[in-house]
Image (cartoon, rainbow, N blue to C red):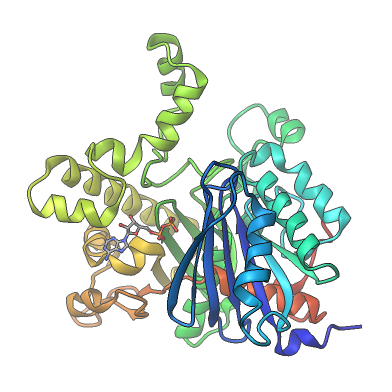
Length: 421
Ligand code: ADP
């Protein structure tokens, strides 16, 4: 029987990392958040929880070594207990899960089979999937009987064709070990591509979109008729664009060079590529785009070079995705950088003049702090292809999927499940 509370219910959205837990209480109908917060330094000596409710910010210490269970207990017993009927309004829990491998191409209601399948994907996301499983266990304890839904970062990219996801390596690495491109940020790419279609007044299935999600992590996706057909992240989130501290594309021979010639061990190579590279590594200053823009404007050469490389790599990917898609209806910028940085958008677009792209300067400058809309120039004899800035909202997608699934509404693709088998 469908759970009636879902019709008017709120969804508690959980994003569990190895030492953190982001939580938000979301209305699936409009994405409004009545609560947002973060449990931090979990498992360490001084964990904390901070939250924002009704526009007011709060924080509190948790006991030494506290983990996901204690954060959820705190949310239930201290934050929500004094908020009238808010606790009773929760009709489902939605979990962000980083890796669903090839097992999940849609969001699914969590059951024992799904938990086993998430466990099976631990090798593909050794830092993330175990934390998600802890979050699921903690939520089950705190909300026994409440439906829980898993929404996978990888699911949207499961529509990629073989030529996009198979690496040019011995084929048995794919068949025996699942080594292939999976892609991440799928929830965000899906959200903004659906939103772009709505802005263009068309169905998602009628538009082709290039979506650039630019945050600390960054990826780009080619989306054809509503389906992802290529994306820049790979087996792991390290491949592709230049990111805050990750290198993105490099010559794989470089790894051998580091190991054989320069005596790096695996841990050092991992730290180098994931934590010391990208904008931080090039600039030798910061991984933060805003700080680099400021420094670059004051003449810092490392910051200038880092931003140039970031924009050059992104423009190259956008141009290549024009070769992937038969036609492009819109280029979308999203994520903290994509939503806020007129400088980056202008720099990237100015490299794509050969494809006809051009920004409208005033519109580009206006788009920040959550503003949505067009930034292309519609003037000049040949108008630019459409360029949109669209604030992403992954929590809303998770809440929507959770609500749709527990309502048993299988009329939209996002509510259909592969069953997790
Ligand atoms: P995460 O991947 O951690 O979710 P975000 O999507 O929040 O990251 O993006 C963080 C990035 O957005 C940082 O590099 C930050 O400097 C950048 N950013 C935020 N606001 C601006 C701004 N006004 N101008 C330039 N960059 C910005």
